[in-house]
Picture 1 (cartoon, rainbow, N blue to C red):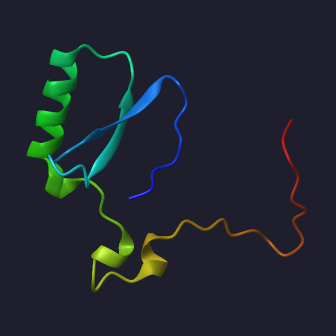
Picture 2 (picture 1 turned 180 degrees about the vertical axis):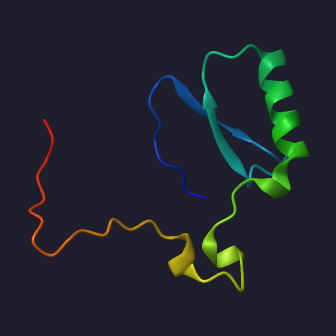
Length: 79
């Protein structure tokens, strides 16, 4: 698995011993804190990382955010 380079304040940690399930965490945790964080993430692994392709029967148009504008509205960028 090819992972993207991270900023210096972040690092990869893994859910499993085979290092197949990476998670990005902060770099300044103590070992005990990192272990506790990974324990909590492993405990709730089923609730993490879902995407639309993993949810059969859900219409993607329901989950997508859209901004409906009036036809005569002129989009501007705020400063």
